[in-house]
Image (tube, rainbow, N blue to C red; front, top):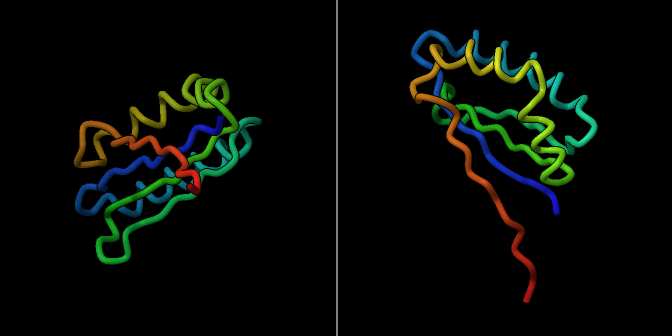
Length: 99
């Protein structure tokens, strides 16, 4: 079963350009992961400091491989002081099957 989630966070005032650059570089690495099916980065139109990332992985094993990638920890450590939250807020999604 695919693993699908939204990750969201808000860049601190004045840090949005640095956050956008960092998440763009990170996205290029994640998209190269064998089990990654989507890693789409958005900002909220009415609130451009709010970042939303839509992620899809082939399955739980692919998601765990993503979590254990060597560039994830350094990315999150560099991101944390630039965002308002303590960490990215993750929302895991399940597909709705038609009746």
